[in-house]
Image (cartoon, rainbow, N blue to C red):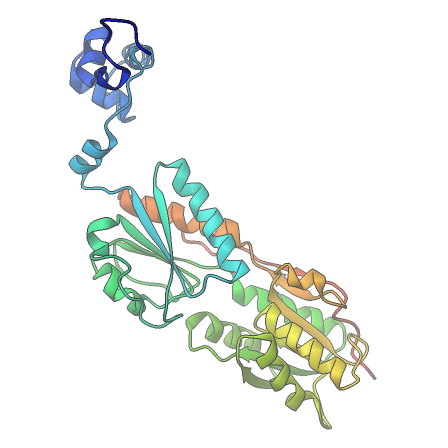
Length: 340
């Protein structure tokens, strides 16, 4: 309980920038420059230090709401993903959120109800509530209702976009497919199948193009299947049950590779003695399978962090870094020499 005659704690006025200026013996403009980090070249180092000491001594905290109103910023960004249950997108969110938090920005996660289809506006007016949009594995046109061609946009794992307020950050997926092809060729494989995700998106089209380009002249059959264990298993049963079957199956995703392993086991095929199987992502599942899965490791957290960094750069009017992130082939027990 406060002492008699003392105002209750809630009524004690918070120190203002004017109080800091008076304590440091400088103008309020100088205080604003120092506390916003824009003092270099305009305020001396000794003066800046004096302002910081005065602010700390008074317990001063800037009014972020007023500052954001002046700057026209909400300090909130939106991350749009096709699904919430994917381990990969969870990693993307973790990396993006880490960077956002370090820069005083909130990140709202929005799994689109339509998957990769047109995403609905999650708020009454997203354009009034957000500074920018970060989207993973979506098409730019699917975000029209959210950004209205006005909000800064960074696309992850998507076709590169033109425009000053847009940027695209990708993984080196084509190189990942080339690594897979080189690995299987070195093991003596000559008959291949590509179990391709039955999803109409840039990322899966680019994977198919890269794999076909890495296996010129090879026997490559492409079979499309749902992006699920059960869907991949059904497609693989048809692919593998017959003469002239492939000796290696390259899958667009670790879940699909798990479906192929189930199909192979059901048909009495041994992996990797009779059949080699590869995936992509390096999910936790890849190490739980028997045999463990050879796959392409995608750095999901670093990917999300790079995307958020690019969005912050767009908001600051600087050029974002957009070079592809490298990926890595992880060789495990699901691949081996081609059968005789």
